[in-house]
Length: 215
Length: 215
DNA sequence: TGATTCGTTAACAAAATTGTTAAACAAAAA
DNA sequence: TTTTTGTTTAACAATTTTGTTAACGAATCA
Image (tube, rainbow over all chains, first blue to last red; front, top):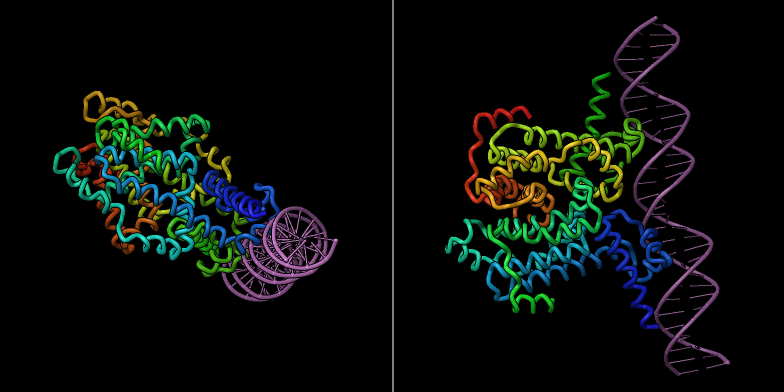
């Protein structure tokens, strides 16, 4: 009994994630979600009260998960370039599973601006702050051109996330199948690194690999 | 009479653009659009038959306009780096007016994949093809590291568009007002150029300025 | 002036979507 | 076995959103 309860609730959430974050179908109705999950629509209300509350739960859980991962990378004591390589690797891999997650956040943020403010207020430290010292050291050592931590983080996010967000557009323009696009994105990890650092991406060292496992 | 007709139709379209492309409020109902425009909701049906047809018109017109601008830049015989500088300048400026335009395209594309395919089939030549020769020359001359035209164009789009798409998120994270964010984006033009070329952005020469006027 | 056309409006109708409830059902506890 | 608890379902109700229509009014033209 107890097992079934979690099963159905999880099933609904996972199905909604697929529709919203994988297929980018943000306008999916409760009926469509229920159909896709093969459950009665009333169960969505039974477990989540309302459609909006379900979205809130989903948003909260998924943002939290993504943020935790990213934070745990930026907080390590890895060398700067290895740290960023791991960041790219992680974000792109996560994005391969949920390409439209950022899109969902963007839309929900535009609809209910207060929602996102709550998340931000939880973080005392901005992620750009976490890399400031290391970034400045790189710039001083002339391994990087001058750039603010904010702009560096935005560049990094942009290069990683945009090709995911624009999945449908880019796939259509370049006539790629889902598999071809996957492959393209995996190979693009190195392009992103080279764009930021103007040198080849280092292999993840033992320490970085270890961290990657324990995300 | 004839003037009024165009006026109202334009008013509705402009209002919808503001809601969709400026405010990112993609779930705006016909009632909300009508209210915002200060017209009777039935007029939306009078001019556009249905909500969906209005969106189609809007999408078509706006994509076409943006694409024409971008194409006309890539098709000039400007020096490569000046051309890209002008591209950045143009796309960011357009994005300052309509930050969520890309977002709208992404969502509509995910909802109705066929829609976007129609647009792409109109173009015989991909925009990445338009810069291929010049890009290869730059790489050969060692002014740029090796990169495919596709990845170069995606980098360019990503760096220009992502900060617009994520406007709400980034503004919240960094606690910027609308004006501060505007200013930040204008200054970021140079950051984008430096990220791609690892040198200062050139001033637009007379020829480029002329093209910029005639967009 | 009278007829016509077009834009506009309010009221209505239809459809789609969400939310509620009572009853059926199954599993576990008494 | 009976009771209780939690899950599932179908049917219903409420709300929201879209789409339609008939009537009104203003400008245009015969």
